[in-house]
Amino acid sequence: MTREHALKNAIAYFDDGHFLDDLKRRVAIKTESQIYESRKPDMTEYMDEMIKTFQELGYETEVFENPNSKAGPIFFGSRHENSNNKTVLTYGHGDVIRGQEERWEPDLVPWELKVQNNKIYGRGTADNKGQHTVNIGALKSILETRGCLGFNSKILIETGEESGSPGLADFARQQKELLASDVLISSDGPRLQPERPTLFMGSRGSIVFDIEVNLRNGAHHSGNWGGLIANPALILSNALSVIADKRGQIQIPEWRPKTLTNSVRMALADCEVDGGEEGPRVEQDWGEKNLTPAERVFGWNSFEILAFTAGIPERPVNAIPGTAKARCQLRFVVGTEVDDILPALVRHLEKEGFSNVTVTPADRGVMQATRLDPDSPWVKWAANSIKETTKKKPAILPNLGGGLPNDVFSEILGLPTLWVPHSYASCSQHAPNEHMLPEIAREGLEIMAGLFWDIGLEDFEIGT
Image (cartoon, rainbow, N blue to C red; front, side):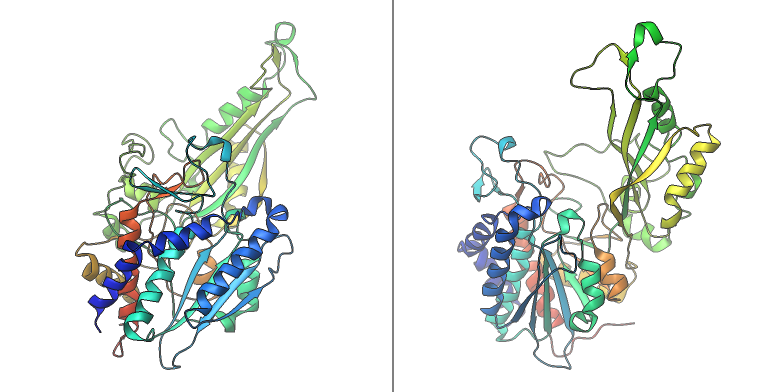
């Protein structure tokens, strides 16, 4: 049996409807981690689904309690074939964000898989149940074709990624020997373009914080006090304007990356950001002026205001509010001094005369920035495998623009990390009407089968 047979088996899994059957079962389980306490039985049900699935593939399985008592369980599966083989760790998350049932299209339900208008709808189809279902199907195709994997496989499925992966880092530290591997090959996030296979090797970091002006208790009549007392919303607006200019360019020196490495620039040189027909258009006059759109989102830092409140927006009155607050976020790349992000902001605001503005970190913590160099032999191997399978040159991104708990794998476990996404930017991830595209899922099965086949070859070697 050959590589071609393995790819055909992977495609058959999609074409005969078994992929949709498996995904339908998984989407129906309401694993909303943001309301974990009320979803504990659902998390257990998803663990049972993973146990059954992987035991049928000859894996030993175990479910661990999360080191964080307020977070969901962690599934681990292992298939050990030969100590001389490479060991591949594959990650996924079984939790999803809230269903938002009332906001979906009238004929769609987040917990019911539905294929309509060439889209596979359901909560978790894109993030991440659909993506790890693709990878499980690819593993199955290798076993059916070769009779074995040809490598040792370890599977990690958590149930808290949508809540910041609480407990995952502690679990990795506690179970370093159990999780020890040669490489992480996993799937999450979107492709750069819907039709182009994509490979990324890490993620930008993320820190969320509040900027607030609190001047007094209560509001005061704008006719009686307008022009006599300071308006916190105006102060906050001006404070925000010194963080980034009118086209969104960051003005805090410590927040601006010192350089883009040559390997990063070369990798991004042929990468065009495209969210598909339903996605927003890239605005050429927004963001860092001297960078390409790909360099702005994958090689640079970006500051965003996620929410801004003063007074009561839904019921405004003629009164000067006493407070104003903005929830903000910095997405940052490798090389940014994480511990100095908020102190640098405070220094900058004080220098600009905003000493009455307070900065407070949000309770979500910090997601670290990670990146495997595009010149890594693992990257070259994976890119060649994908090209052999699809006859397309994959887009190679040093890191995803969004966030993932990749530091757990790259820093704690010390692994090279390869991510092959099976979604696209306009999938409505984290929104109503979440979906994945059938053609990406089908091609994703081929791609992953090719990667798993290649790493299982008897003469497999990675260069230096």
